[in-house]
Image 1 (cartoon, rainbow over the protein chains, first blue to last red):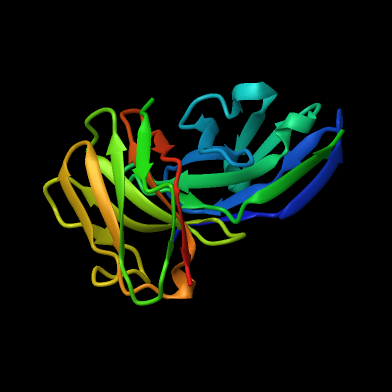
Image 2 (cartoon, rainbow over the protein chains, first blue to last red):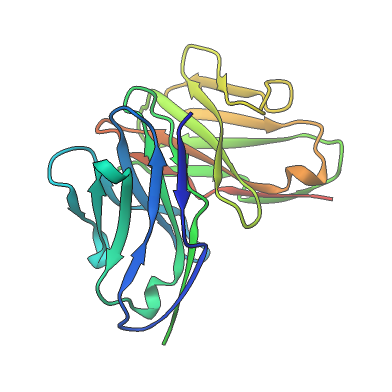
Length: 113
Length: 113
C-alpha cells in the first residue's frame, strides 16, 4: 500500500530563514506528487505538483520541490520564509490510474516575525 | 480549477443522530472523493464516489456508517450515521479534474457531543 511520511511535524522559523520540509513516499510505480497548504481557517490549496519531466518544480509563493526518484523523496523548499507562510503543509501522492490521494501527516510551520 | 461548496460548514450534533453533508461542484466531474481530517491529524480518504456506480470505501470505512450518494456529475452527499464523539472531524469533499489535479471543498466541521 502507498504511504507518505513527513519527517517534520512542527517547524518554527524566523522570517527570512530557509525552509526545507521532508517528504518520502512508498510506491513502486509511477506516481504524481503534490504539496498542499492549509492556511489558518482556509481551504486546502495546491502549492505545487510533479507529474513528469524536470524534477525541480516551482509552485506558488516562491515554493519549489525536488523529486528524487532514487530516494522516493519530494522535499519542499523555500529560500526565505515570510510570516504569511505560517500554515499546515501536506505532502501527497497518488497513482495516476486511481486518482486517490494519500496524504502525509502534515507539518505545521510557524514563522516568527 | 473547480469551485466546490459544502453544506453545512459546521454543525454540532448529538450522539446517535445522523448528519448529511452536501458537496456541490461548479462543473461536471467524474471522480469525487470524501476525506476526513480528525483534530490535529492528516487527511484520510473515506471513499471514492463516481457517478453511476456505488462508492468505493477505503479500509476502515463502511457503507452503513458513511453512506454516500452521487446522483449526478456535480453533486454528492456523505452521511455520518449513528454518530459518536469519535466522529468529530472535518469532512472534506474533493474532485479530480483532467490533468490529475484534485481540488478540495472548504470542509464541514462536525462536533459530536
